[in-house]
Length: 240
Image (cartoon, rainbow, N blue to C red; front, side):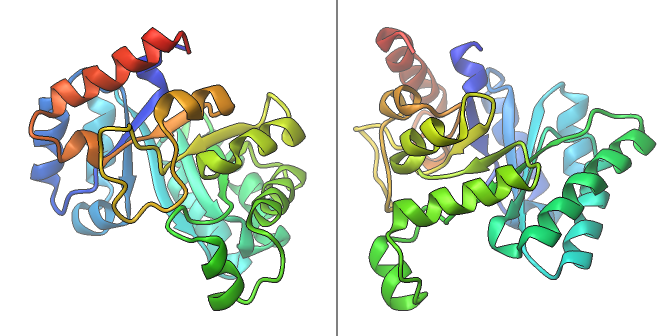
């Protein structure tokens, strides 16, 4: 995979007009993430806009509800012809296995390729302390992320979302065919902001990530094009 194809840039903007402006500013980007803010604001029309521009789409709505609701949401989302869809692993085995079946059936009916279904292990804004003291989960964070990834793999999902700090262990245990997507990736020259479990792009790829989600270091830079190029150059120079 080419370096530029491994970077997913989030369209974390409030309107469709803002999203289109960003896409036009960064024509080099081939893979875009549509999350809750933009999807709620613009609706599914933004997905058609991106597909018309031959862009790949990570629909990051992080479904988490009772199984029937999750399955229905995944069925609807798969018909859009997107590339990746997220679901929280903590939705449980019934929701996960049902979602896998639903996206396959829906994509077949819609005449499009089925999306890769990937599980959220633990949000990258959360720390070990949050897990222990706020969420009252009595196991260590790396072990928790691994257990969520294994639940997803056993349920037939294509991969998982994890912080780059857990990716090496997940790659070792889950194998090479399990897709690992890492948000919380920050170059040394950028702010970490609300991301707690971070790593540089070069280190994340070396640790085993398939895709890197890199947003604000690019999209809020004074020169987004230069920031995109700088990250690509760093990855190329490292030979990853």
